[in-house]
Length: 568
Image 1 (cartoon, rainbow, N blue to C red):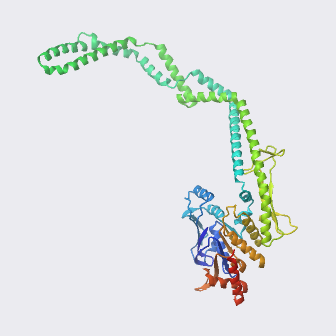
Image 2 (image 1 turned 45 degrees about the horizontal axis):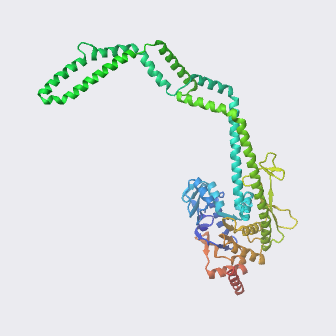
Image 3 (image 1 turned 90 degrees about the vertical axis):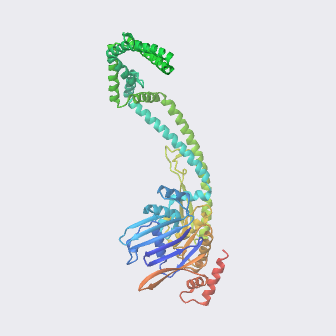
């Protein structure tokens, strides 16, 4: 609900703050008092185009701030999250307009674009009197409203799921055919690359193993000389390390037999002797196994050069070349299985189209039933609101397509996001006139009453935003005015309504009555808004009845109207 509206330095308003009823707020005031300024301020904070002329003369900027309670809905929360604004139950939207023409917008103190403010405003408040704020005048909302009225959401969900599954299969088929076409176009090159990589018989650790073997073969002579010399030094020479350690061990054993303090070194010396013996054996074995093989060395060098050339050619490392080889093999194999896979997916698509057609037919049938009911209900409301000869029609049009995904009664139709029907509301307010789209209804008063009739019909099913009526009493009086007032009162029990009126029959229905007045303060005209108590409200309604000269009869009539409204 719209809890409050704060306005500063806007047109004739110096500064004011207005709180609203959660049900029906009525705003009255003399012509020219500034009621339209309130609507203009609200329009501005809802994202309408701004002009620096609206800034009060002598002020640097105008500020309009609206506070909304219980504003959190799925659509609003999604919109705010996408704009990196944290959703909340209380929403504060603010617009600042400088005298230089610059505009700044905020939602919950977070800067935002005018476009975002406008999107949020359209979801929160439906302001009548300016066509661009009338959601029901937009044909793209009619489908949703009819579905909410007819309770078709389960059928819509089933249709969407089926359509999504179909699109997924179609995407699979398209991707498969695209890949196969690429393979066919490049088959000769792919075959050549695969054959070239297969011929190399690549192994992931080959390069490192080859480098190690090349190093050994290149240094075979040095390795033989050094390992042989090591063997001589350790074991074979006359004064070898092994012979010296053996003599030392013999001497140490004698010493330990006399002085036990030498015993602790016996084991270490025996270990050293074993190590030298083992190392001498390894060096003899190593030198005997050295491979002097220049042919093998040349072969390995050629292999390394080949691997380096192929890596440079494909700009890939050896492991990446192996991965590429496997990918090429898989892609070429894809073509061999293409016909079978395509046939399988096409069969699934045909089956999914048949399922989608069933969902579309079921949804369309339920919508047609709801449309007929809605037509009768709205025509009844219009008659009650003083448009007795109105004709209201819900049109449902399908787009025929030769390759359409939906098949009904031997014809093919386009699969739209929410069914096969394009839905639009048409109306004729006068006998003999052809029904036209709502946007083409000329009279502002008629538009407001049509909107009121539609919203009364949709009130319990549709998630309508806050409703604000500016011209609802244009061209009506007497019994029709009373009927309009009752409809507003009834609708306000389900949705918050704010209405500007000149008619006492409507004003008497208010849960909250605000009066707009214009006065001169410090030689400047100022618009103010007053919250009326019972007595002042009685006088305001009496003034609507008899003009400035309030008579006892008009006061009595006003009292009767207020008393009668309490029963609604």
